[in-house]
Length: 180
Ligand SMILES: Cc1cc2nc3c(=O)[nH]c(=O)nc-3n(C[C@H](O)[C@H](O)[C@H](O)COP(=O)(O)O)c2cc1C
Image (cartoon, rainbow, N blue to C red):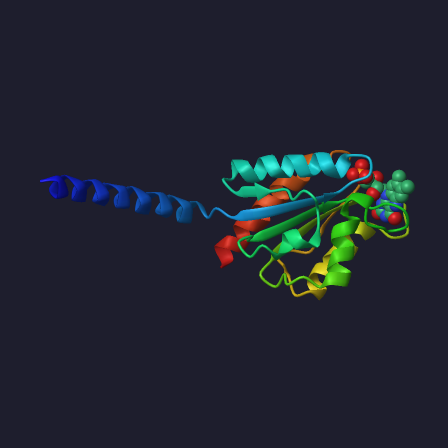
């Protein structure tokens, strides 16, 4: 008798699990690693808004702490988003430097990663968006897949990058998922 009651219960649980997994697949949820490089906070604010937009689109977002190259080796991550400004003379900001140096010296295995770069800069400088460009090159050199060329936001033209970047990231991921 006990066994008869148990079987329908397990079947219901199985049905529920299958329904949940169908919802996940239908919504194309992705696991997104979001890293930032910022000196004065504009790229950080932009990354915060990107995170909110990704959550609203039902993606899972991880912001690694500390930001190191190790974090990129997690093979369960689908997409990497780098949101960085530029400092010095086309340089990566200090808070992203450990991760960048790790890419160039430790050569982590990141061929599973598909990535996007949001680059904040100012075209009055010689190396426009150099921080983002540098990160883009380092990721490509290690075999990660760029799903769209970097979004370059010029402080001379765009005063609120946090208004533009979130939609660009969410749409780029949606387009990439639809194409696959
Ligand atoms: C000292 C300094 C150096 C900069 N160097 C560059 C540069 O080489 N290339 C560039 O495109 N922008 C450069 N910028 C502009 C910043 O990247 C841009 O203002 C950005 O929006 C700042 O973002 P943040 O607040 O996240 O640091 C520089 C800004 C400062 C203050």
